[in-house]
Figure 1 (cartoon, rainbow, N blue to C red):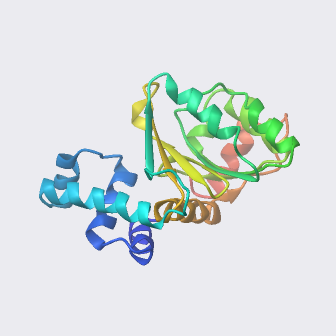
Figure 2: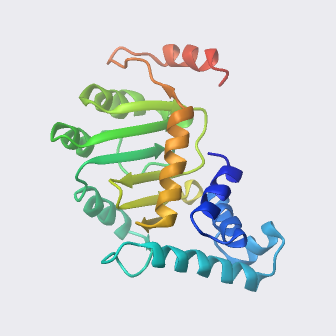
Figure 3: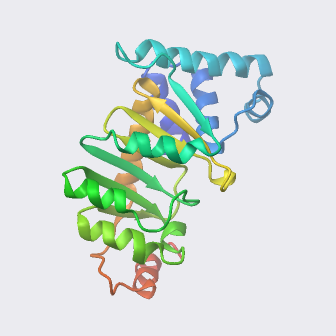
Amino acid sequence: MEPDDLFSHLVILGLKPETARVYVQMLWTQQTTEAALAEALDIRPERARIAVGNAFETHRRSARRGAVESPVEVVTGPAVKLRIRQLVNSVRHEIRRLDRPPHLFGAVNRAEIEQLARGVSHRVVYARESLELPDYLEKNVTPCVEAGEQARAAADLPVNMTILDKDLAWLTRPEDGPDVTLTIVYSGGLLEALAGLFESCWKSAIQLMALTATTTRFQLAVAAAQRGWM
């Protein structure tokens, strides 16, 4: 999904155009300060502040009854990994993920393999840079695909994101590196927009070849070249 498509989707969901522009800018560029948003969108800082507030308020009103009061939760520092583990343990049916570096955990994804074994489906789109990381294909992607993960690949992805069931999504900023900030978005209009972003990326991504322990980087490189990635 391109920025213009996400903008249109947000407007359809009920966000005001200026609010939608600010939200798209935040998602695509990870700009979060009023000054940066105002400069990028050529609006006054107070307008950027109001637009961000409107986005959160729209989400709050659209969230289902009984959901958490705040539409967005921000976690930083050592609590990030613990919060992710808590959220992952709550999944019931499906995880959808856009995978790009940096990764917070080690190459081996034992949690996903255990979830697949108990019937939780996983759909993952991998950015090319993830597949090019040392050991990531062999120790993470291949074992998960062999366990039942549905995997596709894309030349690039706009964000690192995981969606749990239809309840929530979390995003991390690639430029943060190890000092990551985790942004959690709860059910409502903004989550629907993120789900639309995933489905658009999934639709345009290529299906990975049948991965086995003997799949080589050369084979992946050939497939990437055939699709114009190189």
